[in-house]
Length: 431
Image 1 (spheres, helix red, strand yellow):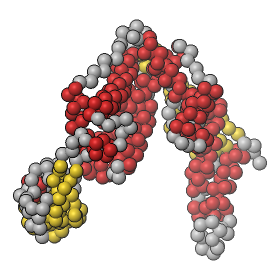
Image 2 (tube, rainbow, N blue to C red):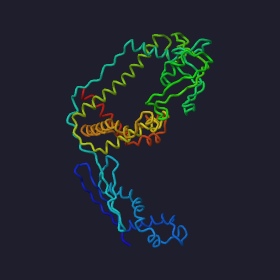
Image 3 (cartoon, rainbow, N blue to C red):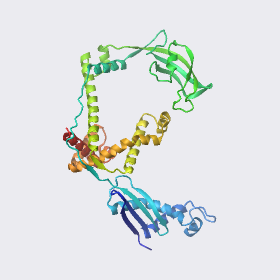
Image 4 (spheres, helix red, strand yellow):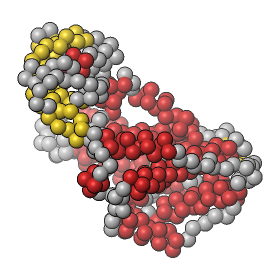
């Protein structure tokens, strides 16, 4: 029997960071893969005169052809070929390599891997750009505005004994929607608390509920907007049967002892202490916003002095990552991507196009920071990374090993710390 034989060939394409690595597997290794493929196919192959799983190899090949085993064998060897391509070429992919089945026959299989490595990055200027963060200012108007929101959030609702629904009231209603006399899905609710003026329902609904009394029933003639998410209701004329069960009115709160007890904020027991707490909260949020804008401004300015040819595959991979993150965010809100597309009148292609600029900038900034990291010889030891992992695991109340598994290992902690160190250096260099 012939011994295993592999051929490794590495070619560079027109771009320096795009490589083609050809792996050919033949001989004993290919023969064994074909044997395994036959053993798998034999279990389900049906040939007259033979029981399932008992068809001889020559009979199988006569009925189905040798070629029927080739692709199963190739699939089984793909990972083996990929590992060999990485080991022999010594290349480090910047994105998941693409693979092409170059040739396949009874003698062997040939894979061609397109491996894109990190492109050459030239950062011509990243010092002395004179970029400063904005000053954080907090006005009395902002504090009083937030105080008003806080009082409104703790507003008490009391039931009206009599009277009618007015602006600002909460009407507790039963309702059911009908299109052409037939109830439609999602159009029914019982004891639903509807704040008048919130514009929660379709245009005209809340306006027609206003003026209704407790116990009153009414038919509301309405039309769904033309751009409504559900196609079967968009622009449709409908009737909502509504009954008002209860009317609640808001009672404004006062800055009294009872309010501060309900608030439950440590050290806050007066208007002055509450305003100070609100001021601190606004300051913290503004400082975070200013810091984020400051970082973005530095990255944007430095990127103007960068030369790099970013492969579209790197941007496409980042778009996929952003899509995955967006899908998770929607899922946490109970919305699938299909439902999001329905609500917004969008689709996957449009959403990806929308994310392309952010994806490109993410890749550009990452490559740029990595180059500056190299130029400035910024490194993080395993000990530093391990300490950071311990602290973060404690912060999130997780087992350290579990945290590292989710984060991607100590190496990712190291990389994250190196990026943060690089960013802090950029701030210092560009004040």
